[in-house]
Image (tube, rainbow, N blue to C red; front, side, top):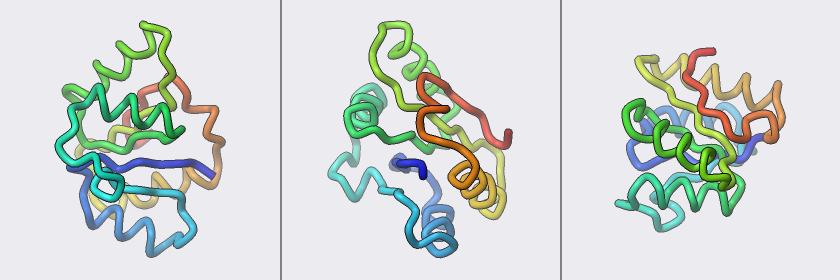
Length: 115
């Protein structure tokens, strides 16, 4: 099972749909853990410290910060960028990834969804 963190702007309907379809999904939102308004590098550091793959729609800044973290030799559990996808497609893709992969497969990787 993947451990996921939805960033502040990740679509709420996608989060709700994921949790409705798989109630046991290990997913927390930035808002749930007191990280509202935190800058991307600090958010990625928190995700790394807590072993959570970041779910985001931000294809502009988050991938660069994540790759910078990897180049610096810092832990980076992974980033899934869902860009230009319907809510339904986001839900399906994340549920497939959760069911068919292991957390360690995504370390140090920025993945653009859909695969």
